[in-house]
Length: 499
Image (cartoon, rainbow, N blue to C red; front, side, top):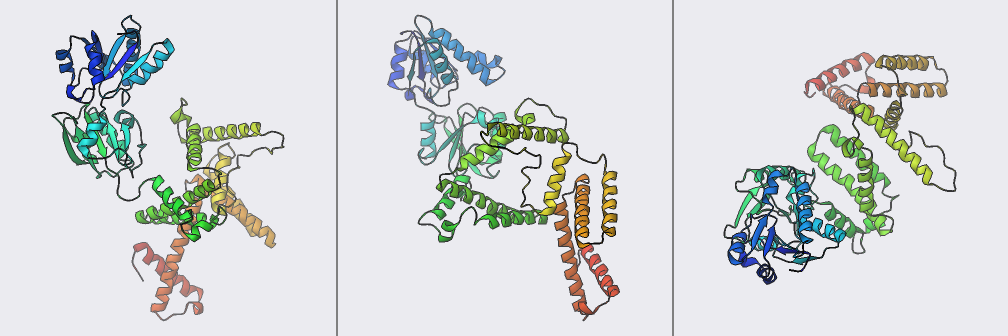
């Protein structure tokens, strides 16, 4: 053989699946190095050709992880390729399908000036597709089991079929299952394909949650994930919205602009809050969908105007999350939530300073820690957001007693106020102090007030019902009668009975 590296694909099964090019390489070689001898065609390889066969199987037992193992194998192949006779390196399947050592070898070969010849082989895909009776061009996605096992959310569109290859063992299958269940229901019917293209080929249909309970999972196992029924992925929703905005779409949707959609965005956000307050799962699913629709509509309008795409939105928020969580995605260590918040504000200040440095030839006002608190927020929620921001830099009371004293102080000043303007100002100060008290108590002031409003409205309706049952007219009752009705309604509400 000429100097350099020849990488041969052994195919997914026995020798009957070898290509003629692979046979010619074996026939003209004196030795071959196998990434693994655990392959259905290896026995016939040693029987059919006068080859000296080596494998790296022993290295698997000594390796601490696959990444370092593949790096070591690649370096050894490079060393062998520098010999006068070069090296023949054989791998299961096709060298360019799921072979982690091959890209490493090709990169190192460029650095050392070695030539690399790829001799294609049948990959695992062809027999798996044949066994399943599916077409790869019908949106098929391919994922590596080892990579999925290390993730928290699968990088798959659930509206399209997917193959998860190289499912080595049940431990790895358990990790893959947990990742997939962040996108697929645990009862989703999946297919486990074993030893495709060999005499041992077998297909088992199981619910996803049983994936790691199956015996016989090994390096010849592939998982098939059929698509979910109905639209389930973001691309499907984007297609629907893009169609609505298209010339053959909906006249109303086509007329909308960023500005015209503003009230709907706010309305849907409040409806999500209402669903959360009521702890209504079905309503929350529906309202989150309505809110997501608003986001997708704004992105579609921007895409049509050549302004930005969904990729810009996702890339920006993903980068921000990673940048602002160095204790998760970096080396920073934190002791708890309070330190996380302090670091968060420090990172934001650094970002603002960087933004100022990039602005040229114009005067920029100094940035504030309060920048980014929306003016359009409800006043109570905005007051708490402001209080939380300033508290992160130490502008706060040392304990809750100081807040209680401030509430009392503001109440006295309100009582002493004489003019309408003074009363409004003092009432505002009192509300701000109460919002700070809510923060110290770990209560969301906006949610607490919404709950109080709902509770009052529910009880007042009971007052109306009680009055109607007794032939009483509310507007003609004195304060004592009203108080009595209110206390009765309050008792009924607390016990969960009706008037």
